Image (cartoon, rainbow, N blue to C red; front, top):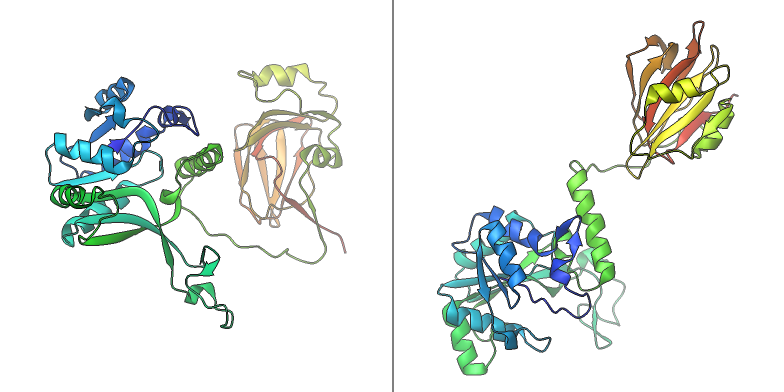
Length: 374
């Protein structure tokens, strides 16, 4: 059951806000569907618009009474209403405000609920660091020597994204105590979540964090741990400003103002230039990559350098170039693609009898490291 009240206070219509182009609620919904562990999936809301989303995803919609959709309604109340009206054995509640929860984590949570025969299972997050409650230490002693955080007993906080109750225990606790959310006197377990799944959206800054994390997860390959790479020798100089780099590479005419246009015709750009002089024209410049046309006369080129943390490539559009990489020389011509792996010393020089043009594909503000002459 995914509860989705329309009238959120801190962020208006939070569950419908677009995150990376999709309504927030759809992320937890898609994760629940992909887990393939539920008999039925419900969106629980007072607002019919969530019924439309339920129809789109072919899940059930439970329309709760409006009096259970106010900002004063507590979880015990709307969960109890759902349990009384929708038959079942175990209710798993999945909040839509944690869009980075994964199907694997949902499946692991539910499997543990069943395997260990819990009455209540709560998702929690470990905080293995010195913690206080009302100014008093929880997992350390003020009069003991400093203790490394890795040796401390973790303090756990509710992650809240996943909660589960058996129908029977929830009903009994509501009858006996008027509450059931925390588990009361039944058999309660705690399931640890880590990393991005613990991001919970309560305010605008949380949305910004989730957007960055989600975009990174969608666009990146498997995380690759990287370390600082020492310079090849002490006599090196680093440059990152591309216009200044082009100037030092003797590129006379430099255009960095007409980038990111919806449509460009490369041949028309080349024809429009004064090809008696060297020039560059940046076509694309985004957070992901850049693409720059570079034309140089025979004998001109870039300086010997390498990139410590970025690969780049060139597409040869016109003329001939002499390409040097780690001391080996190649002749490249129109139609060739040149790949330059990070940390490889390289330079390219126009040769032949006409201007040579290449499309350099990299990213803005990439480190260029130039060996200094002894």
